[in-house]
Length: 600
Image (cartoon, rainbow, N blue to C red):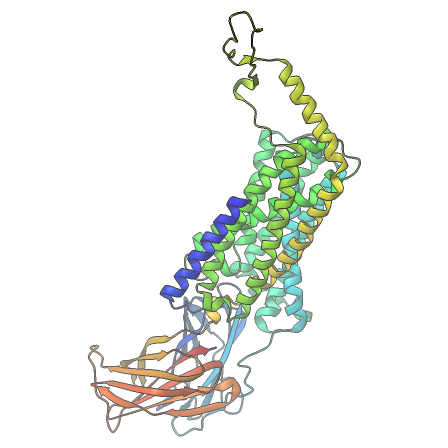
């Protein structure tokens, strides 16, 4: 346990030092980057389509993408499509000059929905307000509560379905005849399958901001079935059932499985672990392939450790267990659990660094604080595991066989006084009786250990209870946007300037530090060739649509050719702010651009 503590301390110290020294910007997490037409833009004619570009790949899934007229009627063709990061909404022909409202709810790669709304004007129409347009559709409270509960059941089931058979295979061959272990493993597989199917049914209402009553809606089921998350959930259910069926005859015979059967069950268990890990945050963001591997090792370590603890509590750590069985199981289990804990510590630290990225995000976001609570509980959990490991070492000993299975005894013999003095010590000699003494000591240790089982059982119960809470926090984290996407970071983005005839030049916007209060804004204007250009006029404004704040005009000062600065741009408070730029190139040509950024 000491080594694992040194590992976690070293990794966390390196992460904290790196975060303080480098303070790298966090990666955006499926946020809206640009739109065409831009927010609040006034164009001369109705565009053929509306496009929205996001920072990461998205899908429509069970969500929606609509364009409404000023009268609230839909004016899009209903054939919205997503290609990579770009959402395209085709419009009907022959639309009049009017104000138009764009509303959307898409699903990010990690299965979390993202919604928003903005408006633009054609010709002499009036701008349509976005307030109350469903820009932030809330998730149904029943769905929001059922999803983490379902995940928690799935995690607990995975621990039983995988960890209990591993305990029997690696530590206790006689455990295959235990009805309690059989029931734990079987019901664990059932729990995994049921949790996966329930999550599959809830994914549609979650993505569409619908009630739990729409779980069996054919359109929502079809949308979930077409998503990667949907297929992963179904694969998880199938693998769980397959693992239970493969091990069923083994439990009935009460003997360890054959090599071939072990290999088949191992493949199914590995697939089940990967299917559990390959959904949510690991598949989004940087290095998804590596993240899935790390998450899989983390899930496997969790399953082996917690499933083994459940098996120990249910069968081994009982007054009826003989000292011989106790020694047979606990000694190898102590080593196996130590390896699982080491894997958990290392992979958990890697995951935390990826999802949080900086110490600032750890203490400034919901994800960060839930992770802090989990880390504190894990520290207590490791302490309890250390107590259990020390108990095993003290009560049962750690026996390392000598080469050849032989033991030696060093004997010192001295001659009697008067025969020429004492002789030199004799060399070490083989002593067959030592084996008997060692066996006797082992039996006495085992018998003594039986008397102290209640103390170990209490320690393991503490481990198990804390682990249940840690699993619950893990289930919450899966459904919480990662800290790297929620923390506010300086903004630096290059956007195309949109004119009525199409793109015309570009603008680079830089906002630092992107927090409530005074901020510094830099605006750089470029022509189509990428050279700085001087406009006839430029205005910048800030808006927070969900709080109905703005537009707030931003005062600019010229700082060079095509370069403008606002040293005191005031952001009133936290929220998702929209920065809009309007550039007048000449008397007849005007262009616009906009971007959204979080302020925390």
